[in-house]
Structures are given as structure tokens and as C-alpha cells.
Image (cartoon, rainbow, N blue to C red):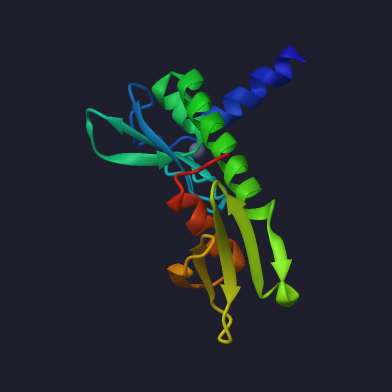
Length: 166
Ligand SMILES: [Zn+2]
């Protein structure tokens, strides 16, 4: 068991490019690429979703890596894992907002959701694009944005407009 773990670690470490410093990096930020298709610039792993931007005093440009490589190169795995954990929580909140609590009308071409004192509307136009608007009792509907390619894109735009409510 112990030997296996050791072997895996050695194998993994060997994957990091040898033309960069192997330590002394600092984590600048971590962001959600939303799709797991970023190629780690430290090891070449092609399916990174949460990208860690790390910098080094002797290297001109920051490196966009995955969590494992950032952990190794910065020597601070706790920080990288914590940042990634926070982003994962945020992604779950966003996806719940986008997917849950909407009421369907009109065969799915219109959906609405109540947030605080407003009703927010997603409407699919004849050209298939989605718009986002809101309405309040006794007031005209106000369009917030148009031209979203998908329903989820329009709902995500609302989530960002509202600043990411729970
Ligand atoms: Zn990597």
C-alpha cells in the first residue's frame, strides 16, 4: 500500500514540465472555467475546469494550471484546495438558481421565477434566442437582456445580474 502511494506520487511529479522552476510559485487567483477543457500549462492534463493562476519571480508570465500542479509548485496545497472548494460551492449555488424554482408557461417558451418582490421572465423568441426581463405588480415589463443562445445562458445572466443569490 505504502509503496503504491509512493510510486503514484513519483509518477505524478515527473509530469510537471522540467523547463520551469519546480517550486517557489505563488497562487494569484483561481477561477471557474465552467467547462473542463483547459489544458494545464504545468503538466498538459487537458481536462481542467478550475484554473489556478500561479506566478514566479523568475518567470515572465503566470502559469494557468490545475489544482494538483498549483499545489505542488506553490507548496501550499491547502490554499489551492480551499479556493477550488469555494468555487465549487459557488458553481452549485449557480446551478441550483439556474435550474430550480422556475415555473413553465406556454409549452416551455416562457418561464418565470419570483425573487424578492419581482418576477423574472425567460422568454424564447421565434428565432430561438432567449431574453430576460422582469415585472412588478401594476408596472410594465422591463427587458434586461436579449439574444441568449440557451435558456440556461439567460438564467445564468440573471444570476450574475443579481450578484449570485442563494
Ligand atoms: Zn497540471
